[in-house]
Image 1 (cartoon, rainbow, N blue to C red):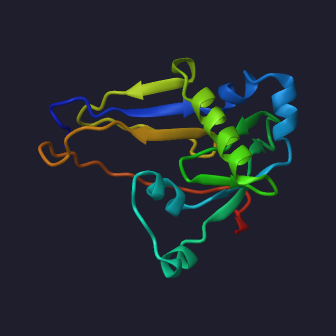
Image 2: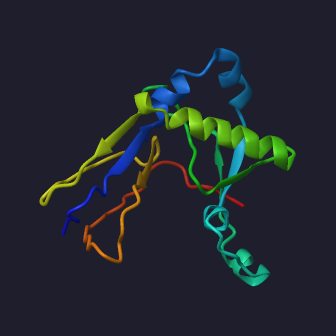
Image 3: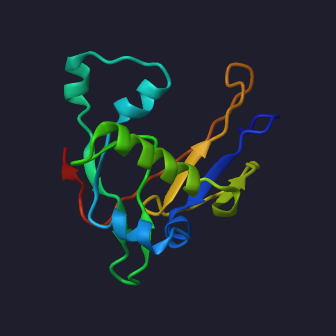
Length: 158
């Protein structure tokens, strides 16, 4: 079921975003580890969590830069859940994450999919950042099915 209004999903290519970074920035990002947790992305939206909830939703640590073992091609690994860079002061880490997210979501790296009934869209979640665009979900119904499969090395414990 597709809303009668624009309810696109946008996909940002994290390979292209990484490859367009200056070499000095790429080098700075190598080896960095980032803590991702759903509490971070939800707190940005105004949600609050008790200490007990935060302990249950600890998240995971992922490398900032991932390398495809078959192709050697590198990509950024970012999301709205990224909240700190391990070993960095909080202000510097948040600014770097913000700058990288803004860089990665420039129009040149983003595909916007306008949904039609019967569409099938596939993407590699390891090298793509995606988001649904805002629409009035109280007024317009949208019913879609999603299946996620995983591969590769597991995330490091937080």
